[in-house]
Image (cartoon, rainbow, N blue to C red; front, side):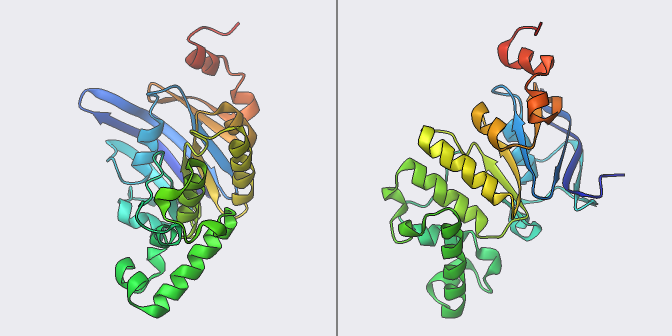
Amino acid sequence: MTSSSALLEIKGLSISFGGLQALRDVYLDLHANEVVGIIGPNGAGKTTLFNALCGLVKPDHGELFLNGLPHKWPHTHELAKLGIARTLQGVGLFGDLTVLENVMIGAHKFAHTGFVSAAFGRNTDENKLRDRAMLALERVYATRLAGRRADTLSYPDTKRVAIARALVSEPKILMLDEPAGGLGEEDIAWMNSLIHNLKAHSSILIVEHHMDVVMSVCDRLYVLNFGQVISSGAAEVVRRDPAVIAAYLGVSAT
């Protein structure tokens, strides 16, 4: 039996690459309007976990439940229809397109035709996609950027646009991959505030190395080390766990 109140639950996820065991018996659950952080030292398996949820790697073993029901591990093209959206560490914007066009790409599930024909041919679909994209930009306070080419943006603004592109599909589950990476103190404060606001509409999974961000925005944490969950629970409890201290510092806690 799985937790019927969980939007997403993982049990026994194991992944290996050749002789390397990347994940072993990993478990996780995510509930409505919750921010759950996945943390751990470099090489702990955080990105591999994200990639399994996004269909980029195939699990060797493991069960996935969505809304309390068993579900096969998704392919990447199925994510939007499942209500899942992800940002990338590298942002991944198309530099020669405008900000608005980049965000419209994320709304492809609402188009009655493919994105290219909808955005540049069918006026009805184009107007609807533009409206959705502008609303997503408004949610990240970036409507002023709509007409700018993506390759003219500052790095913090590319982060805003990448999140808007994920939001435009109206996800139930938003996966943020190091949203604070490369940001200065002022922009990190803005990111923290944004994540707090976003959880009113989406449940959020976040991989992040910035511990100040993690402690500020996450309701619960899962800590990975060498591909296994070594601690989970409320952020304040997890940070004092001797196993977590040892994993990060390489020493035993006293």
